[in-house]
Length: 278
Image 1: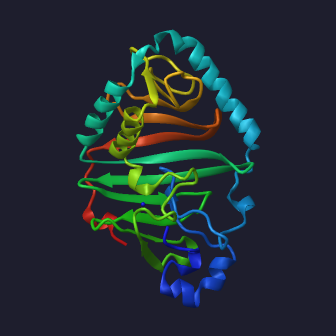
Image 2: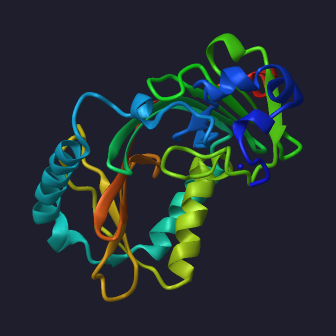
């Protein structure tokens, strides 16, 4: 959710009256689902987006250590082809009429650690709202409108100025490059299913297993670049009760690139239509 060269062109008021302010460091929303209007020359300096809690290598090492423990305990159980499981996940997500959750994403990018926390809302037929909680782009908001466009605004002093972009715009992406339009549960499962249909190898545990960091057993779903299973692309922990992801790991060239946690999930909640307007 590529037609903008820079943030200063997002909307006429920004371009004409506030471009200087934008160039000095104000940034636009994204999701992690997480989703961001990420990243242009007029954005804040990269150092301001990076987490100060730990270096990328330290965070990466901690996550990899946890995953290694999971793999040793569950590898013998991961024998089922995951394609049918992905279909079940897709059906389960499609049966939910509305939901909200908090997404916590850590991205290891260009030698920095980016922490993105977002509040996400979904309502059928396909309305999405993402609110940036910080520290990354705190206060920004993006909404997928019923006409397929995405409307958003900056945080802080520029929250009164909004603009609209096409759903496939680079501006409507999370820090990991994932688009807003594919950040709901159903779209995520469909993207994975499309990968599987194109030859990516997917495996899932036969039953829920205990993993580090999760309070109850989960299904472990893995996707590899091909049938040889030499390179891991994605690993997801799936709630056995609703078949929705609770934790997600993305890899690039065999290295951990992004880690996402979903918390405070509320299913089939009453969400007013006004929530999806700006």
